[in-house]
Length: 118
Figure 1 (cartoon, helix red, strand yellow):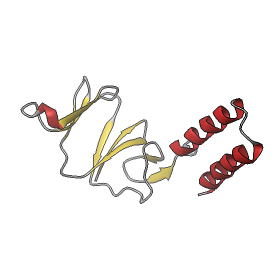
Figure 2 (cartoon, one colour; figure 1 turned 120 degrees about the vertical axis):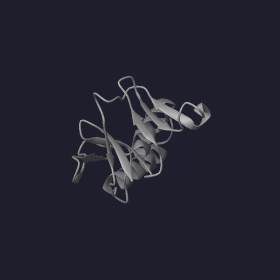
Figure 3 (tube, one colour; figure 1 turned 60 degrees about the horizontal axis):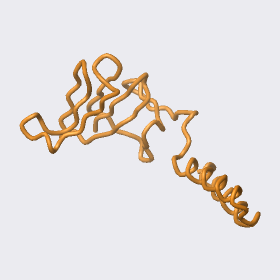
Figure 4 (cartoon, one colour; figure 1 turned 120 degrees about the horizontal axis):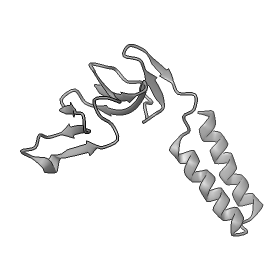
């Protein structure tokens, strides 16, 4: 596997056979310029602010920004929050604003607590 990191934060994971090209302007994932429909540009990362690490074995529960990688070791990012928790918090706020029952909003909070305990 390959990971792209910024300040040691692992942001992307790709298989070893995916071509990753880091330039001064951006990082390109996938095909070369001959097949532009098969590529993705990561515009906010480039050769001066990101590192492409090859031959890595990512954690089984890897998710973008969940882990730091220093080139050798993976460590859990203490500031990471599951994206589903963000969505549930927004939903809870919306339903509370709309006057949903306390039972319903408590159920949402219970699910947030369950996910955060994983």
